[in-house]
Length: 307
Ligand code: DON
Image 1 (tube, protein in one colour):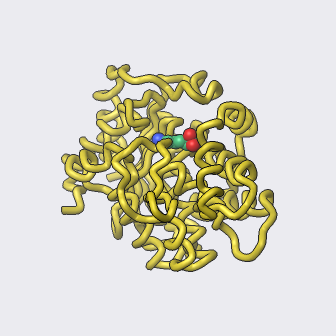
Image 2 (cartoon, helix red, strand yellow; image 1 turned 60 degrees about the vertical axis):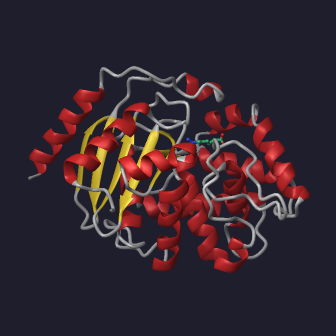
Image 3 (tube, helix red, strand yellow; image 1 turned 90 degrees about the vertical axis):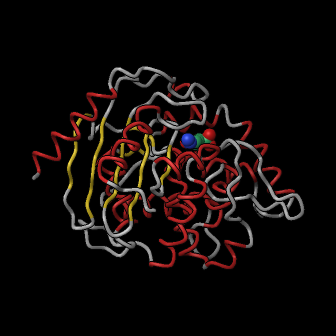
């Protein structure tokens, strides 16, 4: 069984390898330097089986794939009402770095776009945490999802912070609406550190499998998050996880998912499997080109569409 699934994954990788369309993210200089040929895919089942092919142990930064997990931590640490009062759950139909705030309240439309994710980061941790303690809470929480201690890539973080004008502008807008109640620079600094956590495709598959396994890490057995939080997070991943490609994704692939600009992509199918792919070239939405093709294939070959 194990070798059949590995062969299937290796064949799928072979089929997308020739697609060299798209570009690695250019707006973070450290990411633009990534090897664009890296390619890997991992399946992690809810009973703890892991199957992978290609570059599954290469580290890269998690970027926006951190967003659903940080949202989960904010919901767990603060409860639903305070978080929903500050972050909506409606698809924006816009790019990840658009401002996308409700015009009357200034509430970000959802936690997957940057405006919502910066806000979610600010809500992680209970009580009054210092910015560094909050980052620690988030890295610790992401590590529990992955089942191993994760760390920050300081070079990528510094590189992004030098060019974070747009996120700073978004954070200042959030501050002006009192959605953020702290120094906008501290929130962007913490959010950028969150995005700079290093993971492998294997880690991402375990993180997705923890969501698929209703909040319990299939390998460590640790309950990382309660079921109502998992349901909330997966719902928002299905409707908003792929930004302005969310409708195409829901119809073509039909798996709650999240992409990151370093080339990672995860999908979580409740009760079944966590899937992760890694390939740095991105389409105009900021989603991995080969990753999207692989997910389309997995969904169709194995009937994974939730409908
Ligand atoms: O906020 C940013 O620009 C990045 N640190 C994360 C963006 C990202 O990964 C968007 N996803 N595809």
